[in-house]
Length: 309
Image (cartoon, rainbow, N blue to C red; front, side, top):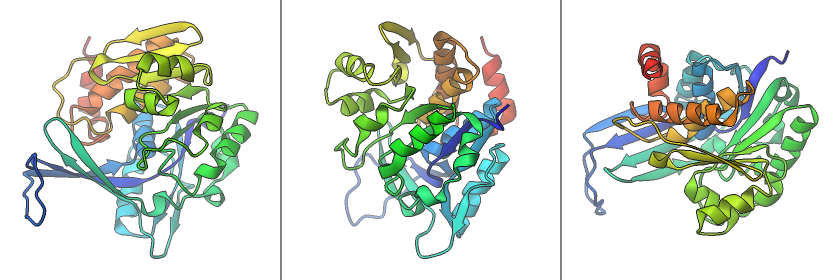
């Protein structure tokens, strides 16, 4: 029996979210937010935290700076039940990353200082630790610039030890969608983009064409469609699941929470309809509190939400 259900190697940082800002942000003005939240951020850490909250055994590897932000981030993961024994704290001028999110009514600005995110590299990994698992998940492909050149090698190594692999690229800040992604996808069992990311990865503006193209590279393509739910394509079989209606407070981290809900069932061998429902429920739960993990940190709130029919 492996030690973990899911291992993750990825970025670890905090999100600073500012709410109630003007829709227009003129330069050289002091603009006031009416609320703020400092919470666990980064796609990899949100997936890890929320998987653990759902009951999965999760091991996490990353590099952080020897600074207060890194300490807060690692404490949040520990409190969520994630094993962080192999997270490296590295002293020096490069500090733990930080994402500032300017939250507007219908859209948001996302500003990231990469810090140690971009410096995480092959030498930071303990392959024996990562392999002691049933499944490996990787997020933020384009942010992890130190590790990205060897991601394909990492996937091959873990697959040779019997793990299945999932990938959520998240956005490419350069909007080029290159960097060997097509070759890496050939080693992936589950690809988890949102609608925009699927089209960008496939090089087309048409979602259906993107899904058909990607499904020739990856055995299972799962596309997150926000309020329209999610679809999964496995070979010629198509599965769809509607979203769960909620009064959304904040959509930050909803896609990562979907990943957690989906993978929680996937590693147990559940069928695809069950995995999709679990993903949509986890994504919906995430939106009921600010940030990507706050709704999962509140056990009473989480359990009450999941008891709803």
